[in-house]
Image (tube, rainbow, N blue to C red; front, side, top):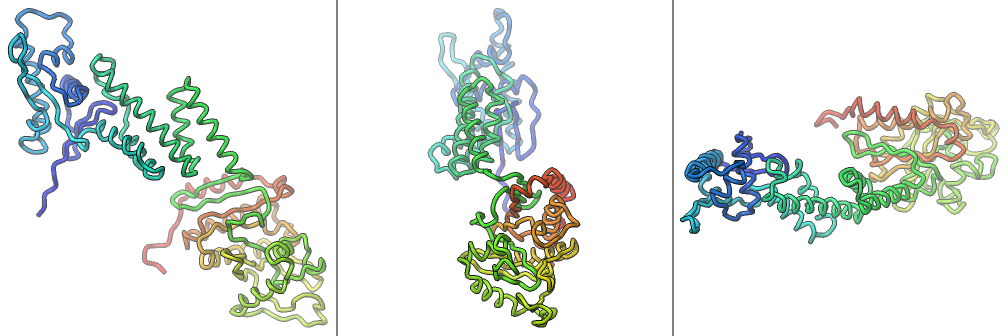
Length: 462
């Protein structure tokens, strides 16, 4: 059986810590200071006399104390080596090396640390940041994130402020500032202003008097506002890569998304202002995506409805205008338009008086049947939906906030059956509708959905 290689880890980016094979080794305060002093020497040899002065910090130097002082240092060196030897015999002597240095006072013992980058967090931190400075943005972000994850607090905490620790601590602190600045730049280059923002905010908190840090934060906030544009609410559902977004605007301006357009149960398309108003969403669909040629849309709808069993067909006498074949409420037809889909959703009934009528139960059923079709035919694109039920369908039982909440509720429920319905639900609200819509209620519902947590289908179910 193959044995695992011993693992030694010295951490000085914060309080000194020694881990051997994943287990923290308790060091006495003097030994921890001794380890920090040797790390601060950056691989250089330090005499026993210098170690005693720096670590023990005697207030007076008594005559004939050199031998006793050397013995104190040697005891702590032995303690340190024994700690490293927990990884296996000989590791202590390999890492804490002893040499002899000729001096005017005679030969003196010297000690130095011999740690690899993988064994010393400050060395690994320096290497990662250096590699990031030479890398392309995506790789730089990964390297810098890994480097900053090593940082636990002020470096060389146990010897903070000591003369020998000032230069290495300052170097590491400045390198961290560089890492934070470059991480912001990397996220910005990749267009991830949302990820750059918390790093910039942290930098301003740590350096409130730094005008450059404040300017970077201000620029990021401005870019985020510009990116959001008419975005009014964005919520990422916990545990899923799915966003629920509310935007102010025009459904047909959402060119990166599949669209949902409400229809009646007869799927009429003629925009003659008698059956279908040109101002309605269906009318705009014909004009803006089919260049006013409703027969092109008719052909697509006919193909999609071939597999659907009609409910009934009206007589010419009963319904002299418009289509006469009726389909079940909730019938959804995915219509290809270029590289995306328009989901034609029957959520209302067109009476023989040519008035569309719907009810809350009809709308709920329609939405519940919409989302599986989006999951099947939506090519995992964002899906944009207007405030269905707020137009000419005469759905007067629900106000605008309830209509919006119903869309969100049925969508989040659909994720219990299929977490990959789409990456983003985008609800497009017009200015006139927004005045009568309470987005705080929708946000509260989404927070509650996070607290309840997604209920996903069991592994292995079909």
